[in-house]
Amino acid sequence: MTELIEALKSAKKVGVLTGAGVSTLCGIPDFRGPQGLYRQPDAERIFDIDWFDRDPSVYYRGCRELVYGLGDFQPGPVHTALVRLERAGRLAGIATQNIDMLHQKAGSSHVYEVHGSPVVHACRHCGDVKTFDEIVAMIEANGGAAKLGEPYVPRCACGGPYKPAITFFGEMLPEAAFRSAQELAISSDVFLVLGTSLTVHPAAGLPRLTLQAGGKVFIVNGQPTSLDDYAVRRYPDLKEFADAVCAAFATSPLS
View 1 (tube, rainbow, N blue to C red):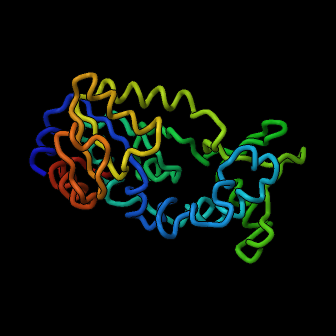
View 2: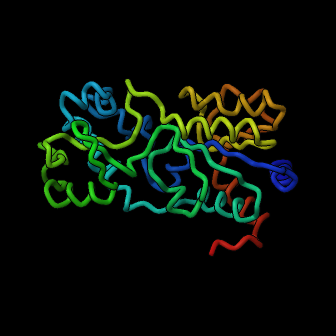
């Protein structure tokens, strides 16, 4: 990875787009993988806003473990490497398709969650807001794994269900986060694509903005992507990438 490391060392501004592959290194199943969320019955309804408003239990049944068990997972090697890059003064920001909040947990400062985040939940009736931790506490106190067949739905005092700030099908992407991600991609002279096959739009178009602005794109992903022919190089191994970055920027303390 000499070419990539040299590009990072000489770059004025580095941006990153991360996808599910970064999270699977931490043990979190890929939504579209063999054991992923989209293999469940009624999977197409889990993140559908119309279905949520009709029956929020579909979402809470499907996500009881995968979303509300996220506290059991810790940041992985890529999260650590990106924190080290930031503290070395190289990394300007991270646009992420992931909703697991692990970049923030690892210590990254500028994270743009382009598909939203469960960090806050809002009542669909009155707009009352609760934090992720408050929703988890409500679920654990009133639901529990034993009641997966009849999932508990956290509700506001007004009776409305709390919905996470994850972008469901039928909703617009978070405007501020996506605009910041676009600005990051345009202004980066080196843009890293990590753990995504660039199939989900519009986030998949971010590295094209870097290319159009004259920047360089490096891809680290196990499968081919639509931009492989335009990238300086595609590497297959995220762990190898993380190890190389940590070794190259070893003088940047993590604490």
